Length: 303
Length: 303
Image (cartoon, rainbow over all chains, first blue to last red; front, side):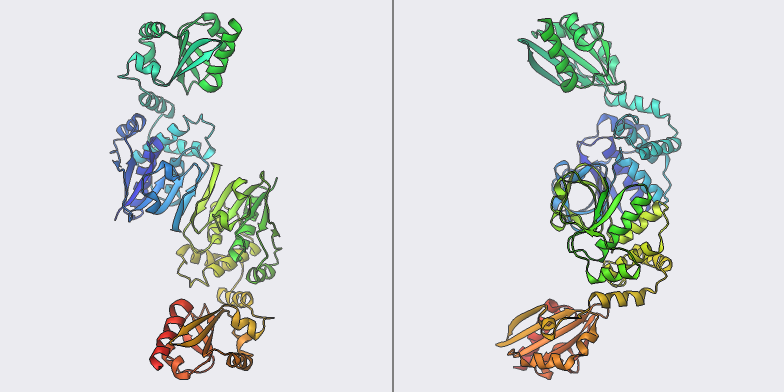
């Protein structure tokens, strides 16, 4: 019976691409294996699969007790498929903290503190002297670019960078351009209304007696917002908040564009910028650690 | 602060030798590490340390919460030092089933279904292109010979055999002879009385109304028993059991020498041998699966 290979629930690009790539490697080594996914493919992974013309893995939501499985990109029951406790886990390949799984038999576990599971899988190709074909190189690289945010995440290691460099040659890809296109597609706001976007991740606060709403959206699809800037402002001003800030956060540029209802002086005070609709605030990426305390202080100071 | 490297409680040869060898490798790679042991060194490991003139690791029985550690030859809290849950576990190298440990941070875990932790450590030397010196080769090999019972254990893999072959050349050792000497020293019955040996692992059974005692001792130090055969028989015959069998089990020859109080015909019936004191019964190594059922049947048949 074929061994099932899968990443975590709500699969990201690494979970999808490491499942497919490790399955390819296992097949090459004579082991019958099938890549699976524990949920719908997200847009970012879809971009990689489309670009390299690879079929999406089959989605599964349950196991039989006699299934043999290989677990990638996670090692915790809570993040995995129901019934994993009773399945025969043959192997775990991951880059997260140790999650308390148990087995009845000795197995292979390879956990490394690197930025991406696909970096480990790529090294397994090398160790086993199996050639990495074009489309597998593309998927491995897509996951590495995704997990390390184009090598800018603090989780990035030298091994991830070396893997990225080597894979980009096989996949014939300009990493910077490809990553940007993939991130943009992955964070696309297409089809969402102005109201949807403002309330996508929205929280309300009370600051010095004022009702303040703060929405944040992580996207590199800035055009979707700025192309409809006036519509956003009409909607934001129509709300009954004393102040409302929408932060459109670009994780690569490490800052946020802000649209707001409120006094310019408060916004200037909070973020040290000349307040204007859509101004880019360098370095501000966290609502909890930056947006909320800065606004709280600025509103308090303006009273 | 130096990283503490240790195997399981009640350390066997693999726990001792993998701690020392991995510590040597880490030091060579520029990481400050100290080999430790979670208990007294047993005689078998002592043989290897003496032969290759290596100091025993320091024995520890507690950790500070800020200690950083590398865990070898186990991956379960119950088998490890108190306080491991709160320590900073940097790495785990093991060949056992997965034991449910958790970590707060990503770490390195290398678990492989091979016969011995030292086989994995040896491969880490190769991967890191660090030369294995004579005495480290000797310790790695000692652990492999111990855990695989000179490659006869069913847990033995091709990787263990290859490691053994290569290490035996560096350590300049005849594996067969060295293993026998080490096993003999490790299972020595020196200093134990006849009564101690008979009762070392002794159980009493009722078979067809008869009181039957069965003692078993695993040793390759057969001479310690056979040199005092008459003393053993005087003692055994002085007991008030209807039948008493002492099985002196040689795990390498995969059989047991038996000394007994009882009827020759029953012994012959039970084990298919010409009953005589000290006769070798080929293939009989388990009290539960062989000694007890065979004797039960033979006593029942003789009634």
